[in-house]
Length: 292
Image (cartoon, rainbow, N blue to C red; front, top):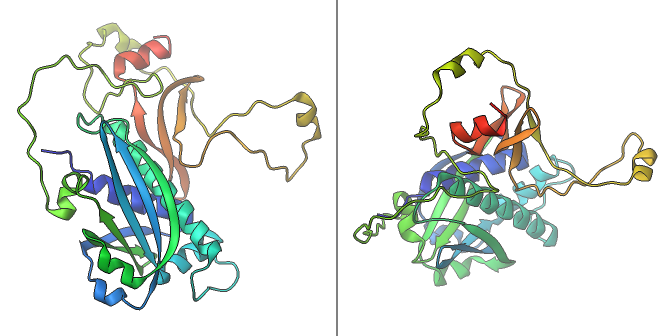
């Protein structure tokens, strides 16, 4: 059976929207799209390509006017007037949102260590304004009904035939895996950090290590880095914006005593910044990295 990515996708969809739009976001329902209800509306169609292993597939995002205008409005912090129609600025905003959703989804999937989905990559090929009639020529359409601060906003997705089995909880399509063969499995590499995948390491922790359990170590998260010149630093003043090399959809580095042990993403927990771990070495590797 193919790995089911349905829940991971819904989680990253809602989490990414919540972070970008500063609105509480939940995927309330997912169901086959009733395209007749959208015949008179416009959409922003985002064509996304997903690659993993030897598979290349396409996913189409259709963002209707009611959702697209709200997405841009929320991204701008509710400043200005709410637009009634899709324009180029809204298209650019939606393109950025979909790019972040797919990038976050790919990072999360890669962190799971699935045998049948490795090195998942996403790329937006285009973002264009289309009429509702376009849906009549597209198959495998599913409506995701979002709740943003209790406001219902739909988006529609179309998965190609190769992706359907990987979203079986949504599509109902399942594939039968070929008969298994025995192989020596090598831990996946992710920026030189093999994943524990929430499974205990086979390396037993020395009993005397328990004597060190109360040692305090400094945990920090690195947002990004940049090489700068001394003369630039001396010219900085209040209000200066320093552009980092880290992209917004890339994971943050988890450091213990200044040593990287994993990667994660920023979350908000009861009004405070928190970190959701996306990739982390096993217990033995973590001990070696921090010198214990």
